[in-house]
Image (cartoon, rainbow over all chains, first blue to last red):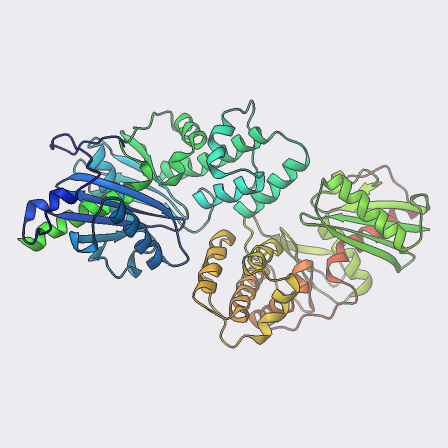
Length: 294
Length: 266
């Protein structure tokens, strides 16, 4: 896993096995405290564990039918991998769509603040975070300390969200992970005229019937997605550095289109951009655990 | 002489064949392939039902979203004109037509002299359309017929808060996971569709009698909620709700043939 740097902190190192470090007891030992961030979104759930501003590890799973179960499963998975137990975690902050239904979380923070905080931790120079998740799209502007300054959000319409990309990939008969790479093979993106994701599905069906190339349709889907995100970005304004988080950041086609439309280059995160919300939650957990110990 | 009306909608294709004022045969098909081929297939099916050959058709008018794909059409006509034409013949007392199809919802006001005086349509969004109902039916693994019938078994309809069909689908799945009764979920869906259709109708004036056509009119649950929502009783239909536009197209074909004019693209 790549390595990130916190503001003013030494180089972060990843420790895949933290068990030796704990020595069983850490009660009241402030600087040996493990905290967790758990982000339960609409399509995926992520967990990040941290200790002294160091990321111990992260996990991503597809959501279960219930938010509570998703949270439990992703946490268990990471605990198991890092050889930890629930008792080792001092403080857990939940975030995301399902954050209020997670019983083991000590607190919850909105995903907007978490994405801002997480992105700023990795890239202190960041001022704009474009977070495109499964069921919403947000543009977040943060100040030099990583605090939330302004944000816009679309959560009324699926256009411009990961779920719509998933449906359109399905209509094309490919996996969502192929949508980005495939679109790069296109010689001319087909303009998708529908805004509604459901109508776009029908449009894709009609385009396939007309034997339009699948790569060109994929490029059209990504371009339409980028157009929607760009509209939202326009409402907050583009201030560098800019980073893209959330699942859609993994679609190279959308990212490239958006860079071109905004005439900018996005910053590269030293972590999986999908876990940045959970990372932010872990940072809030560390802060709150500190306060609790004072 | 026999005339044909072909309505290539966004989800289904329909053909109606008429002789004088009488419907000889009709056929409706959901899209599985290219609109052009579907247009031909549905036409052949209707001809076969009436034991006719294509040469016996005097004139054909095409309408609907895919009308330009009907390569055997002699002329085209807009949907609202076709709908009004069919209503003039079958229900001349109707003043407001609601047409809720696969992808579009329309509301049309007709003057007492039979002229279209106002109309409105949904834009950009699948909320309230047949496609919306289809997505929900698929999520619930129910047939469209069951989705139409089940609301009547509901005691406590759920509330679907999302307008967006994609988000409503995940809401529906959450309700299923929470162990809600299917009838209650389906009733919630029907209410959501009825609410969306009703709010569109309110943009024009609600002159009685009001009639509803299009595939969504087959969903009795939605129809009942629309009646409740608008506080009216919808007029009884004499024909299947999906074929009105195609019937109107066939009636227009008959008129165009009687007074021939150059191929028009109205």
